[in-house]
Length: 267
Image (cartoon, rainbow, N blue to C red):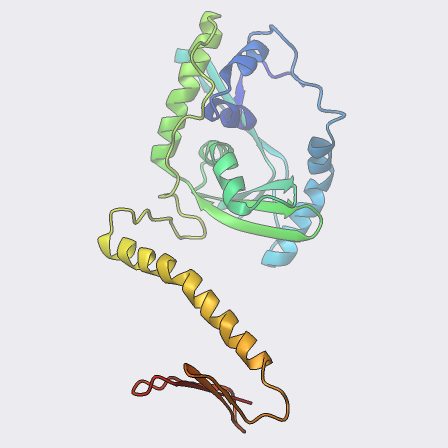
């Protein structure tokens, strides 16, 4: 597939991942794009796309329109063309279908494909995009991602910078790490992610939870083990620290606060 002369949605992902050199070689004609005809993951995604969108329609009880609709926007002053093919439309949102392995999750998919989703929303002039994902062969999820103008401008600056190297036929040097771009503030299903690292109350409660979590597990395990030690013909078992008593009702824990002996009633 010809990839020279424009920047596409998948290119945006590559640019934001910091992997500029290989893409620069492709865009300047120094090497051909990778042949993906024998790439199982890519071909599987292509062949399951139609089913993916059908499943989205079934899950959302909707009808999608404009399958494989291409958008293009040109910036003659900087000799830049943006181009993207959107999988489908649903009302005021677009739909992007992906098929991935069973060992990842939606958060990782959002982090990786956010550049492509924001890129397509900008081209389609839409404020929302649904990411429809098949995980392996046994799980399906979809979510709605909102368009974020600040994210787009940050990404567009990176695209223009990369395009400059292409236009000048100048080798990009010093790239290779993902470009830091915050996405926690971008609503997903109308909800955001909040970093509470500076919230003293939250941090205090979190530390308390972690401190006593393991103790609570040990407590519950000890309680279960003690109950298993009571024979069917025993109505009471005790030692100098603990007393277990059979009850006709549900299992109850009776912590004797005055005496040293703590009682546990059980069925």
